[in-house]
Figure 1 (cartoon, helix red, strand yellow):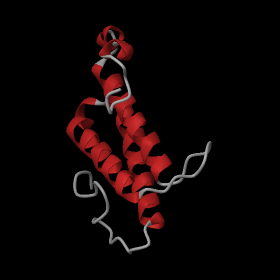
Figure 2: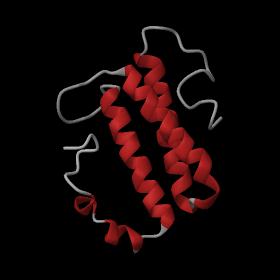
Figure 3: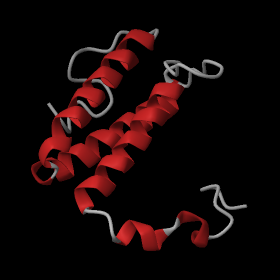
Figure 4: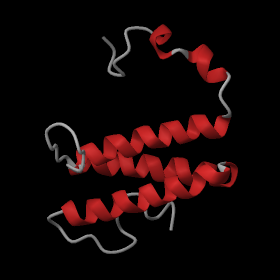
Length: 112
């Protein structure tokens, strides 16, 4: 099975995505990145805590890039994504055993 976890692209239901407004597709991608980041920071409410700061950093940076690139088009979805991003950046800072200066955390250079 490929690394993305889908046996084929048919499993993704791309036809359904075509009917959804772009802002909602971007928001859904952001929520997926937030959920994965929270899990990697050990913040998931369900399941075993998993702490992997390297993975969390990559996911948070990807979320920041998504928010930065699309924020002017997201309308009412923008602020919840920005708030979630800030929460994850703070969670990363708290979880890190090495001090992370403000502005130096994952994605902080993309979305101030």
